[in-house]
Length: 375
Image (cartoon, rainbow, N blue to C red; front, side, top):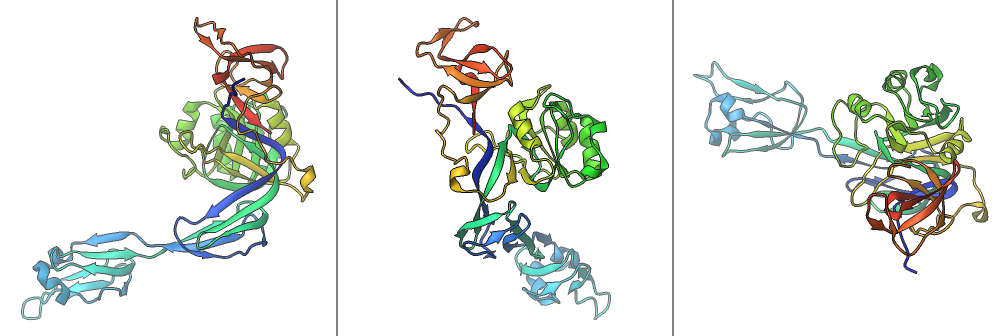
């Protein structure tokens, strides 16, 4: 029979996790093959060129552009500080000279005798890449960074905002279907990755940010609350670069939706353990999922759930999440994949599968309406 495939999320109690840590441009790598690193270990660093600031110096001196080079007090390549005089006119009989001060700190990039412009290059911007997770360097990327490997529990979410964060896991909700309210966010959660249950409320998010919580992971949230948190509507693009002071990860989706019980139990079982999270999400080509990575103690290869995976193939026994109404958000295991198309309530025909739900009962849904949960 023909095989069926679907996108998949990873929810694994133990797996081999690898992450590629690379600079955006060539730089210096600080680690070697086989090195042990911590989450905050600097893997590589470089400096990006500073911004260019154009200055209309000839216009300010009221001189022809061709005369500008002779009036410059600083040469190309020389360093200047903000407010320092970089050019001076000849004046009238040596008097009433006009001076132009630097608009910023940096170096003189160029002086144009055709436009009368001076271009000031700002100070280089240091860029560092850290390991993000503790582990071992299994590959060195020359002039870029390294690949880090660790044994970890891994949960991939549906959507997230905010960049990378690290901290101990703090359990806020007692059950997967409990909403994360403001009164469940406590001062001792500062710097922690807070685990909620169902919807995270706007007041809980605001309090967490004010207390310095590193991240919140919960089942869902209202899209209006996300817009209020960010201050703008988020378009369809990659997330993760938002400067919002708090990383948010949804494991299930938007709305009143509880965290999957197996996901909640997995994260709750690691309460107090350090973890690394990343809210970066991309839902188009090159899908990227937000992740919660909980590094574990070293284990033998035979004890680890290897990352070997059927690549999204649907088969009996595979755990899936239903991603369309009327069973949106429910999780279960596939019990059958009938070969022949079935009649849907809408009146159309589609290939379907049968799912035994975790909460009980069996439902029949189109194959396009499920998302595989890889383990």
